Amino acid sequence: MTSILENLSILQTLTEQEKDSLAIFCQERYLQKWEILFSEWDEWNAMYFLKSWKIDIYKEINWNEEKIWQVVAEEVLWEMALFQSQSNKRMWTAIAAENSMLIVILDFSIDELKRKHPNVIEKIKQVIEYRNSLNVKYNTQF
Image 1 (cartoon, rainbow, N blue to C red):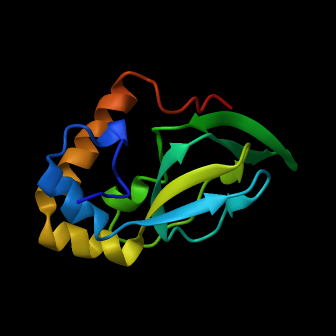
Image 2: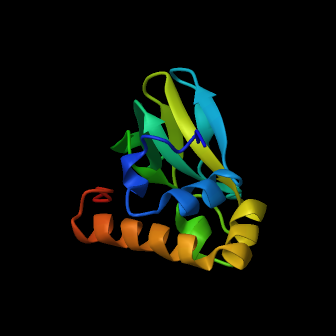
Image 3: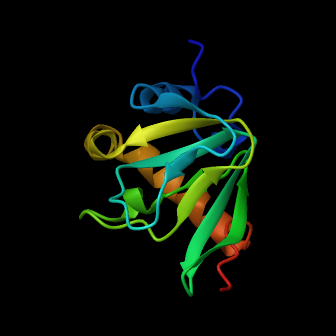
């Protein structure tokens, strides 16, 4: 089965069957350069795997939008949707630095995925935690 998750190396620890199970809950989304994916203080409603190109992350500091880091292909955006069971606000604004392709998992799909395939969620969490431990993911010094 050809999956939208094919060639997404961030998920290389998942088996083909696990990728197929996850793909059912995913959608592809294309962003044009300068398009806003989400804004600071929006309610979160999805997590994202950046499949190609770059997303700039901004934070309002002293009434100015300051770029605080850049997410590049093969990274995850707003993975807190996996770890929190209640609604929460986004802490940053994400804007496409280049035309970009994302894999989207909406919040209700994450809940369903947790129920049907908890092993897939655990593996995704492990990938995120490992990347965080390497300090590869975010530079939040602001």
